[in-house]
Length: 351
View (cartoon, rainbow, N blue to C red):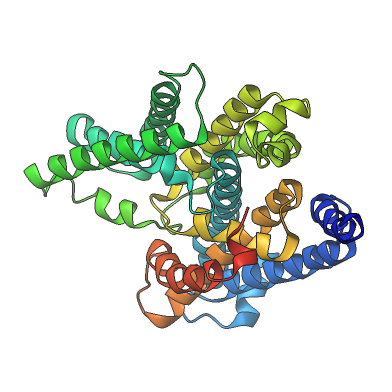
């Protein structure tokens, strides 16, 4: 019996060993960087306006008053930057929340982040007359933050600490309540809330550089926190009791993780509205290649998220010319069948 158990234990240890498969993971990073370069180039070169690629590149490298240069720098560059920032934020937020709750079907919305942001924007439009993305940003982020804090307080009310199960239940319940109130308000006066319909669909086309710069520090801090707790998330994935025995400060890690998710998902939602399936699907795709090590998952998610967002955005511009389809709609259309295929693979769906 001892002889047969040793290889199994060795395989289990290798599966958790951060150095296992490092060359393959590094090669994967190179491939992802190449794909990101391709999607960024496509985002700059392709649009509803049929501008020749040569003029696009000339306008990009030598800005002037030509039509191509104006289109590139006022329309395509800002939305490309937003796509990179929001994709990385949603991908990493999804990876962190799945690790915290030990639930492979969790996404940032499970903590009520999206519902809180949407409810706050609805209140802002209805009672304060907000009419543009500049006003939405701070209301959305404040709503996401308050909702997340409420979820954590509700989840920790009975035992003094929030467990993965109570966090999920509190997030789902609060999200349902806030979504219900938002729908109720919009139905009372549809004309007043017409302006937030497109925002709710999820778009990277209407956000300016100034709005992105406002939210960028929040996203940067969220990414740094996520990287900082990634090692502890490996222990939490084994269960709280075992994590404590390994010296992990579970409560601190969980609080920092929730803060990271709030900053990342709240900031991204404030900029673009609700973009579905990115936070849910990206970590699944990443785990398929890198395994269960959260440090690699977070790094990969920060690259896969932008690739998915930018590819969906470019596709939306191409298939609906001269108009375009919002990126939030396409990520849902692409994400649903892709996620179904992935979760059917045991290796991809497990934490």
